[in-house]
Length: 358
Image 1 (cartoon, rainbow, N blue to C red):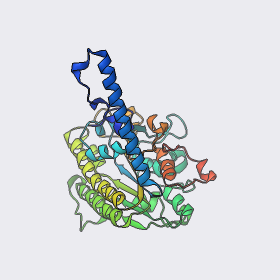
Image 2 (cartoon, rainbow, N blue to C red):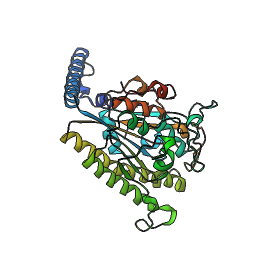
Image 3 (spheres, helix red, strand yellow):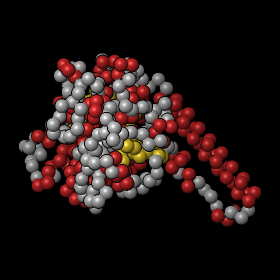
Image 4 (cartoon, rainbow, N blue to C red):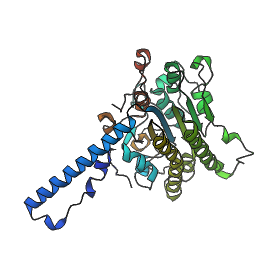
């Protein structure tokens, strides 16, 4: 179980309570002091050795990045249920609570709804700029460049991928191929499976979406393992569907654990690449919104639980921004920083987010 804290910044921090204290020495002040000093020093040596190995392993490595959106999982749930894959990712970098929804009562206030959340992440801006306020009347303002457009403009040779249970993420929100959105094209695409009723026949309560999520995770992970796009987006949906159907309860908890199992496919592919190749992978896992506090079935408003999301990240370069309740809009500049892409001033000046990676 993850620590229900604002941030978990390293393995040493997470395991601080597991240092080998011996209760027999509590009354022997001098010995306790020596034991504490010894254990702290040993832990510091281990950490410095671990950090040195990691630095050596990533020196000159090719930076690559994946961000994953697991739909509609509140922070209190992700901190309570068993999610070993998210824990493994956070153990290499950190876990933190974060915020979505923009500044309440100000122009940037953004509904805690899925599509506005995705757009806030991929553009680094709130809805008053990207102009997506719900899931249906989608009229994105492409003047605010999304992350994929930025990458293709600044580094045309880099390859980008999208693996999504909702095709509109690519075709509408990102505007792939549209001149007004920069005309960029993805190199690797797996989406639209939710429209393939031959492969995924419609089931009551849209339960076929759970199977689509599995396919997206499996097939997308295979692309990561074999092709290693430089920047990829995974979007998995079914947790939000279960939340709307059942609200808080065992069904939702199980859906979250199942989603973590899907994530394991992606994480395993990344881990294998890092062992086999000189690649420095950033993995950022988050959600797009929380849920209401009464039933857990709804979201859209600005209660604390609806606005409180979370981020798990494997980076060892996390800054104080990560520890200080970051926002979903911070993910865009953080990925750019990891990839070594300088955001042009004309774009950077429009961003609402700040990097949480040094």
